Image (cartoon, rainbow, N blue to C red; front, side, top):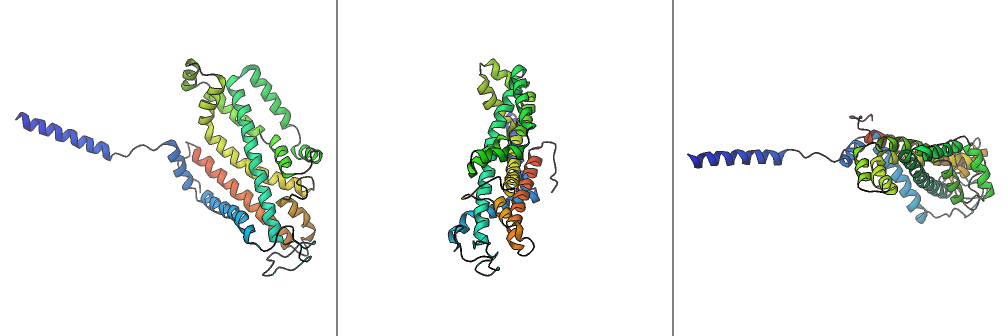
Length: 306
């Protein structure tokens, strides 16, 4: 009888163990975010299109028969050799768009990286320390916010020459403030949490608390704002170059290519609409990716909008 009871108990416990093994394991936060992002159809289509654009501007110039500096004949009509014709000085428009897109994307990525780093450092420091430090950084941020971005950037670019990296650094100097404000608000909330109090009690310094505990818990908003900063930088750089106060020769950008061919909008519209549509596609795809990331990181968003 005892052996039968023991077998029954062992069988029951074995069944429970088997049920436990079969039970689904809870997904990590990263896996849930990725799953939600992959379900966002518009964001995934934008990722595919942006990837195609990046691969095109990296690979196609290697095989394209015309260099962006080569001149072959002014105002040639679109043909098999020149799908978008040539400019007034005889440069192939496809090669101009490829080169301009390379510089525009490079500037936008540099702006996003620098602006994000500055915004996170200033915002997290202000939100965590509070008091005088918070007031000083907040007033410094407000000072930059009231400065007209385009006007100030145009002046600084002209003073320090119009090289692409100068344009990128100048634009980054006026792009970190919104990120700093968002990061500050999150840091103020996280600074009251138990894990921060535990880190303080364990003797962690200010830098360790900020960069080891606060920043990793703000990765969602940081990622979204860094992505959207790329799209904003593309448009601001294009606007600056369009009025002739941005990237200067021998560098170029989509804004400069559009500006150089704006006068041909009526008689040779392909010279204008080619780079303009590429600029619009880049901005739209990055914004849609940012929307998808925002929805994926939002814990209240159970179903994706698109």
